[in-house]
Image (tube, rainbow, N blue to C red):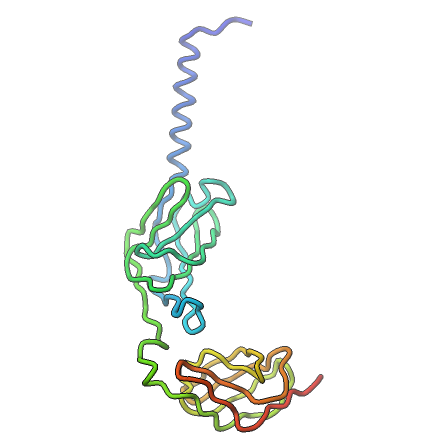
Length: 216
């Protein structure tokens, strides 16, 4: 086998170095856009009233350090509490508590990139008014007054604005706010006979009669 000249090895080294530079630049992180352009922050921190909007951010290099790359996202300098990498070009982040309007930044092992446009933080509608202006829920009627697990129950009353919790004798239930005077609630699994409670920032109201859970 013929010996390679010094010039050959020098040329090979230049080519290899150029390849590394190109590969490194290709993995650099960039932020092109995000959607939606505005959203709610977590308020309070546990998300019991406003769960916080999930923002989809598009760009490149989000997996520059491999499939298990560590990625952080901040909203105008405030770190997101929940970040999920969807692909090398997409990452999802929750708007953090106390976030303010401004650019979104994404940081990976390759560096940090900032969005070309600002993100707008919307105020939580349940805390925009002082709690003193919110009254404790008053529950006037539940229909029907009995039902199976998974069935729908309508609760009528007043001061149902800002409701963040409904329970069946202590068991938390899913609900939909139809209006300031009406809730539609799903009887939860493990529900027990007893009164239904509805809570908002001002306090908790109870039904005057007990709800009966019908066994299958």
